[in-house]
Length: 206
Ligand SMILES: *[C@@H]1O[C@H](CO)[C@@H](O)[C@H](O)[C@H]1NC(C)=O
Ligand SMILES: *[C@@H]1O[C@H](CO)[C@@H](O)[C@H](O)[C@H]1NC(C)=O
Ligand SMILES: *[C@@H]1O[C@H](CO)[C@@H](O)[C@H](O)[C@H]1NC(C)=O
Image (cartoon, rainbow, N blue to C red):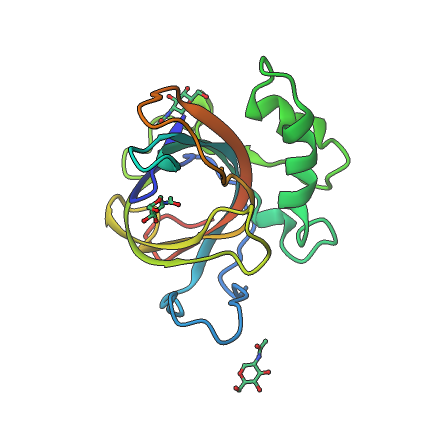
């Protein structure tokens, strides 16, 4: 399972890919924002993240993000299909209603009307490509333009791994935990979210 922290991200990748070349595709950027910079290099992969954002109560009595865990699925072959635009919403609707015992993989397999297979970046089938991962450090952070309940959009500079040189977390759905809490309460609250991830550069191609 990939660990995607608020400040850094470790993303494992397949050694076998969906096989769709998206190097001519582009990532939509919100107009008039200054927090994220346009990427250099070609798009290598687009992925769907299905996971949780974790929070505990701060001494100030509000929730502080302490990390996140997500399964990341290669959706490059969805690019240009009608399902692509809202895949994160489609996946969230299923994930949100899923019982606690249901894994992210099960959620993905329930989206059975999708026209392509989505590769699980973390499954055992992809083991063996030692460089196919990315460790990122946050270089940009913007509040989601879609709504206050959605976790921030991020830009991550890859500091280790050959999967990409820059990774963006975009089009987030849910994951925020607003409101007040009891200072000192160390209970970890996990809030489900989905998002798209865009991977630029790197030496591992579709
Ligand atoms: C972006 O800024 C320009 C110039 O100020 C403005 O005309 C345009 O409406 C803005 N677009 C959005 C989506 O806010
Ligand atoms: C928590 O509350 C403190 C004090 O009011 C504030 O400075 C901080 O930004 C808040 N943090 C979050 C995550 O809302
Ligand atoms: C987040 O919470 C989940 C339980 O919902 C747990 O499995 C996971 O280890 C936690 N990860 C982090 C980084 O906090």
